[in-house]
Amino acid sequence: MQANSPPAPSTPAILSTLPDPQVSDKVCPRRTRQQIDLLLLAIEALDLGGSEALLVAARDLELQELVKNRVALWRLRTTNPLRRNSQRRSMSLSEAKALVVITCHLSRRLTVVIRQLLLSYDQLLEKQLSPEHNLRLARYLERFRAHFRSRMNPKRAAVMAYTDERLNQLAMDLLGQLLFCTGTFGVQRLWSSLFDGEVA
Image (cartoon, rainbow, N blue to C red; front, side, top):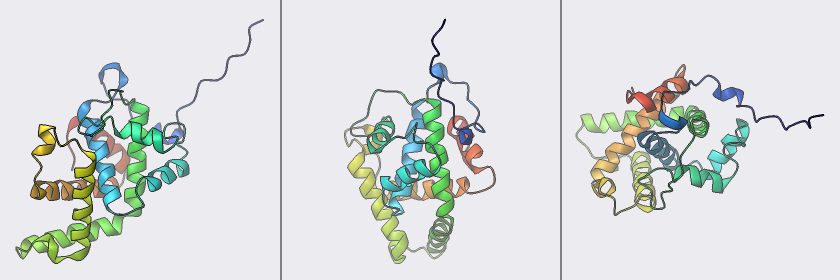
């Protein structure tokens, strides 16, 4: 008589709406890993309590099997090749889906703040004023630059190319993508964009 084998872990229902893209070995390409980490960096720069908010979201969304704790989250994020301590391990599609769902969940909670920052930025551009003229915007950009500088590998050419001005632009571009996450089917749209390069 055969012994009963333990049931295979099931995919969380919240991830079932995201299709598996046609990628080799069912792992995320370099660009996808990099983009996910940068979006999370922007969320942290919005001052949500850093990685703790990401872990709370993982628990609220019942994604602890994929994002178990702080160390597991760090290991996932260090698959970004631009990181100081970049890891050679791959990121599975399920892990990437979990981080995308968490990103969109936190973005929805921050919709008002994100809209306000983007509006302030546009108004300053129209008046040909620098971001420093808006305290909240200046603080977001300062935090983003600080996070980027402290976590990315300064010896990488791609990192060295980021002046403060380029980092400010990256930070604002990421805000636009986070706002994109908050709309109808935002999770599905963001997920698809990470593989086809079309982010609205």
